[in-house]
Length: 489
Image (cartoon, rainbow, N blue to C red; front, side, top):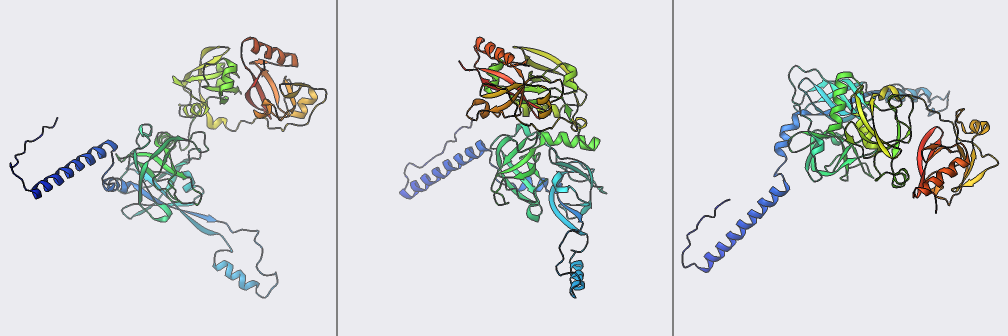
């Protein structure tokens, strides 16, 4: 502890001296409070030192694309007009009569002294030429190493006569809401521009299966794409990718792809020129509260398997209706988390998967395949068709067992058994939960149904077990999903 220093004061002090002493004491206390407050919130006095440190590794990117002339433009003057030659020459001189070169701007950053550069895929997509401008003022041509549209990341490479300044990736998982961050890039062509703010939120998802965005209020505008988001140690914890804006400019809601996602993608692009993501080979949906109740789960968690096509999971014994609770030693919160975790796992790795099946857990071993090799697998996409006669109403739906005629009308493969949904009462729970005419119910209570009596039996069993809902496996145009419907009293 700091010891107070003894101060010798005169026994008699004038009013002026007392006033000066009082003001000095107030100033000292104010400075003490400011110091404590600054230490508590970690507020930097300046970002200048950080900017000076990282600037040499941040780059401006200019891409050039040759745009072919449109062949379907209407002539400005009628064919045969005496002005036809004049307007043709005018169009040619202004680049409208043939191919023209289009340029675009973006940002990036150097990650190694031998010239690897990270940016967004959309910055360089379709580019014929890529030029890198460095902070020191020189430029170098770049070649494309690889891209990953799913995370909007691209890796470039330049050849330099001297080692280049670079910046390291940091651990985005330790970034907290409220931490200071600094963005740097080429907004609206204003190169090497710095903006600062805080981490506004973590774990944001926009549209991709592998999204893990850091939201920040640091100013990000068009041209910032591909630039780095730094923590206060000068480490890259995000790649600036998108903004939320009604007018195209920054309103303080920007998104940076988290570095722990980016670094794995970058490593694969550098090594293979492409991504190699793990593939489990299942179709899944989130477990809702009513689905959890219908299955006897104690909480709505995990990923519910709706279909198991040919692949790693089918070979390992995973079944439709299983709930994946754990993957490779990690608890599974929902489908998004499972997809990301599987994608980040090494292809060919054997992993332990814990599933909930028939009221108890089982552990299975699955050897992961590669997603990129499996993505083009075709699944039936036929459209559901018309209604069928001689039907029975149940649970707000008009149902009929499948026959050959209905299978053909609904595009269902031969040998499939189940109940065709012919009509749905728009005031029913079934309609609210998305069931529509043309759907096919193939399971109830995780058992196959081939007749109305089968469905009635599953409903009775749910009631006897004290459950409020019964779980249905519904297929639409070949796509399966589970729906929990109330069984009534």
